Image 1: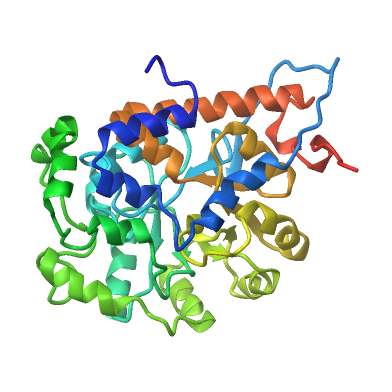
Image 2: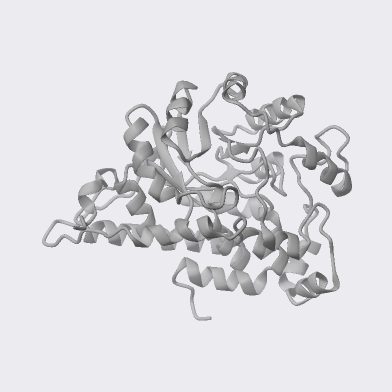
Amino acid sequence: MSRPLTVSDFKELARRRVPKMFFDYADSGSWTEGTYRANEEDFGKIKLRQRVLVDMTNRSLESTMIGQKVAMPVALSPTGLTGMQHADGEILAAQAAEAFGVPFTLSTMSICSIEDVAAATKKPFWFQLYVMRDRAFIENLIERAKAARCSALVLTLDLQILGQRHKDIRNGLSAPPKFTPVSLWHMAIRPGWCLGMLGTKRRTFGNIVGHAKNVSNLSSLSAWTAEQFDPQLSWKDVEWIKERWGGPLILKGILDAEDARQAVDTGADAIIVSNHGGRQLDGAPSSISALPDIVAAVGDRIEVHVDGGIRSGQDVLKALCLGAKGTYIGRPFLYGLGANGREGVASVLEIIRNELDITMALCGKRLIADAGPDMLHKQS
């Protein structure tokens, strides 16, 4: 392939360079994958309003997310198993985000630990928390995030029960992975990936193994995770976490206006309109289609962000025009990472920045802070 110019180009490169088991993990949705597809497709239904003969000089994409300055209103989403897309993947992605000036969010289910990422970066990053039954472990995770100077906590609300992803089952993805002749062959034909993995010591869940009670290896991790996601998670738990964290709190997984209003009552700093990338409730609305009603319900009382389906700078602009104050990319940065490590993540961010900048100008605006519904084409 010649020089990749789009997120889709990086997706195809990643498909060629990452073993199928791990590429499919990043690129899958639950059940029929209908919501996963809708996340992308519904952006295409939104049309932009072209403007001409306006001053397009001195443009700026600089903004803030939860009061923190960002080079553009885009953050890297928390994604599990990032370090299996590329050796030391979380570290490389965090470094790319830091250099670019956008937030990186480390997942609880990361390969590189909180401490690994903190040691390899200079600026604070965000940490995403899953609530487990073992509250002592959760308290310890929060303290570790504080010690690593994480500047925001992203609490995921929509993974009390794990959605079924057919690709993972067919590929034997588990902890530890169920290696078959086919999966071993898929790794063997990705020699660059294999060499990278041989060159790192980080091949397990760094935030959990050696930290959670009785979890010392991948085998014991499997049994632990099977029983730890808490189906009784409630709004009271959000209050408990907010009190222990004491810093900026973002609630991820809001897809309904009623839930958004309850989120406001917790005192959180922001919510993320998200359906977990179409990986949980298949048949749910796309994130972008749910955004306007949620903004209308709570947008004057809490900062509203959106995650899911963003594949370009134009998608970012459309989300901002519909009232989001920040956006998140998950799969796009994973494609860049799988394709070319840190440089691939940086390239994806640059592609999105360029698309966002040019599109904003052609819609007649110079400042991203001025993005609003007047930039969208009204269809009859």
